[in-house]
Image (cartoon, rainbow, N blue to C red; front, side, top):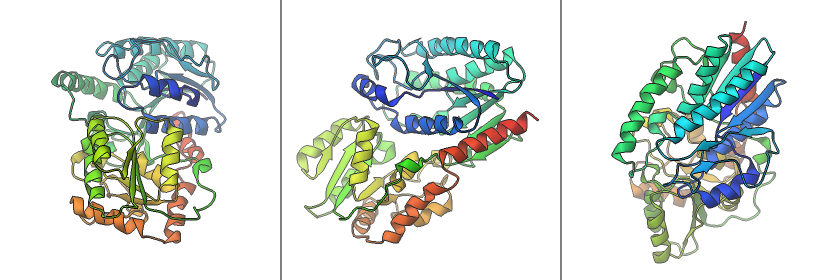
Amino acid sequence: MDILLLCGYFESKYQEEISRKTKTWVENAANTFQKRLIAGFKEQGVNLKVVSAPLIGPWPTAYDDIVFRGFEAGESAENVQYVRFNNIWGYRNISRTAALKKRVRDFVRKSEAKEKAIIVYCPHTPFLEAAVYGKRLDQSIHIHMVVPDLPQYMNLSKKAHPIYDFFKSIDIQKMDRLIAQVNSFMLLTKYMADKLHVGKRPYIVVEGITDVKSIPCAEKKERGKSVAYAGKLVEAFGVKRLIEAFEMIDDQEATLHICGGGELKPYVEETCKIDNRIRYYGVVPAEKANEILQNADVLVNPRQNDDEYTKYSFPSKNIEYLMTGNAVVAYMLDGMPDEYRGLLQVPGNNSVAALAEAIRAALTDENSEQRKRQVQISRTHLYYTAVAEQICGLLNGLSH
């Protein structure tokens, strides 16, 4: 089978360039997800081609480059084809779509395989438009979409402009028509199936992808009082509440380490001046973020289960946190399977005081068996090889 993956992945050697040019945040979690997805497909015995329109922000608000021409570090080392596109907000999706269609046309014309599939990473209109275009060129092509988030819940920033909201609503209507052409899905929560009107089309539910190499070989010898958060600094994700909860912990030995970017960056920087226990590292490469998380004792995901979108969300952050073997404080979202409840330190309610108490409890938790159970979650269906195998199983089933 010939498979074309349309995605927004960028290789590790381009991380520094993207971080330097980004004005908001880097989509590190999405990039890690795609990296593992690609690694899984490469082990499935399929002929895989990867075409990427990297998930960078638009110019001028989120990224420095008006036109994306590729990367300064040179040619791809992983045989990823990066498309060139105009990055001006409002026009870039049109440019991205045109560039992707050219690569799709090449794929369709050059492939001699009887079975062909186009896999789309995430509900992004340019990816879907290009995939549907490929299906018009060859009706036998199967389109599979990986859905880590629903498009209407991808931007939870309070600073979203009314013009953005207007065009986003139009984009979602267009996307709904395109999704109707998709043949199969990988969803992160079961509730996504209804929202996407999947109907009788086949799908799998997999809450994330892990890599065995990311699992720590041994537990840390000493525990301290270090708390960490890595991710977007937006109020909807609870970062402000995390800081308020930490300030309620009266312990001068405790420290809070934060990395990421977003609307709350000025607030975080200001709190560092007031409380010297709080350290902010800014937007950092994924490797640095992983280092901060691994060296901490307690990792916190302060996103609450207080809105409809939580039914359609499984934060990849939770899996990355659990894989460190450290204590994890997080809320049980509606989209999370119950098995995670026993792996997390869950706040008693949505108050800041309850979050502070959960962090205190995690700081004093010496239960090594819990750590082992946390790491164990990465040893089953979430492995990148197992996930890719399930997707290929869907594709093979559709072709017979």
